[in-house]
Every structure is written in structure tokens, then in C-alpha cells.
Length: 165
Image 1 (cartoon, rainbow, N blue to C red):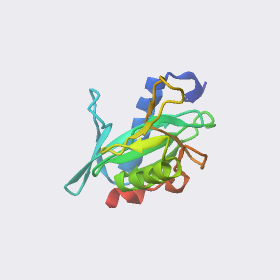
Image 2 (image 1 turned 120 degrees about the vertical axis):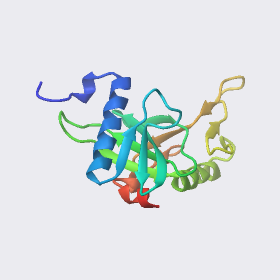
Image 3 (image 1 turned 135 degrees about the horizontal axis):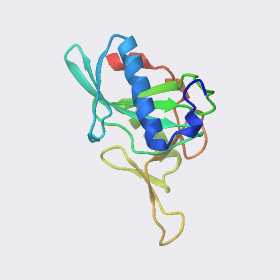
């Protein structure tokens, strides 16, 4: 093996790799950034945009879906790192959204499926149980392309300019 084979590493390690990929991209863009270690709540990376500090959450996947995404609030940024169908040593794709984008996406979800999903004050989707007496589902499945009951983020690919908002 000449490089990193994403299919052979554990999920936790994939998350670590994704955080370093985002950190590298931020650094290449000239943005001051540091990893948040020790499982800092809702933050993987901190960035400094000329004194304007933001938290960055990184979500990685190697399959078609990012499951159970609970969203982003405030000035935070959510970066989706996509390793699906990537070959060895091929860079992932990045999709970036802020809280405003997330709210717009989940509001549409709630409007399209009013009896199935409710959105709480932190913009987290709560799905009704499929069966009576069953458990509901917290969060939303996220895909690149649209599909019913999922959030589609294809329009946010390489949306690095969002960091300046």
C-alpha cells in the first residue's frame, strides 16, 4: 500500500483524518486554525478570522449518507467530508454550511413532512417513531443529492467563502 486506504481504517480514525484534512485546507487558505482535542463539545477545530472566532464541526463518511446529523447553531460552521467512492490517496470532497443554511434546510424538511418531523429550539430534527410504542429518531440523514426525508447539501461543495460571513 502506497497511501491511506480509507476503506481499511476505523470510523473514529476516519473522523480524525477528516479533521486533519479540514485543518490542512483551512491552513492553505491562510486561516488560523487549531484542532480542539479532548472531545470539546460540538467543536473539532477553532478558527480565528481576524479576531472573529468560530467553531467548526467536522462530519466524515465513506458511504452515501451522513446519518443522525444534529446540525449547527450560532456562528459555527459544519464541514461535511466525503470519502465515498474515493480511491487510495484521492482527496475527499468538502461541503460547508452555517447555521442559517442548516435552518433553511431543516425548515424545508419540516414543511415537506409535518407529521413526521419537528424541529427543536436548537434546530435539531426530531422524527416520530415509525411504529406505535417505538423510538423516534434524533437528527437528519444528509446526502449530497436530494431524496425524500433527507437533507441535500450538493450546492455547498467547496463553500469555503462561508467562513467570511
